[in-house]
Image 1: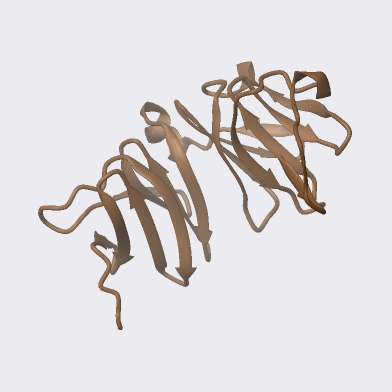
Image 2: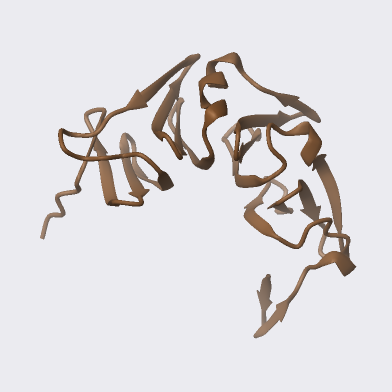
Length: 178
């Protein structure tokens, strides 16, 4: 998975990877590569991998999305909700319990808010308040696959029904200026 001077390095079970199915990749503040697999969260050292979080400690062993926030916490999106890992401890904030019914596909940070793309739509966590963000009439935001922060308060939302943009707390079809 690493391209350097034209060569590709494969990381597999021979390198200590417990599960070769890798869903997500993130880089921590120290530049280390973290892998979300079908059965755990692992750290790639450049020479091998080591398990950081066993899948049995997650809401579901499949780590679909990994996201480091500005405080250095690792958000782990799974098939059954989200977990936050910091200082060697796993936390499941009560405000996020409503997401346990959904697959978490993407998490991004926008100022003090967190945007979470799920199989059940788009959510914003502001402080301890989780809000489902609705679509303009006639538009569906279920099955959010990816999120991208354009700038403060501007979020692109990749869905199975196309690209949307958050505007004034509502998801709408983006109007691109020429």
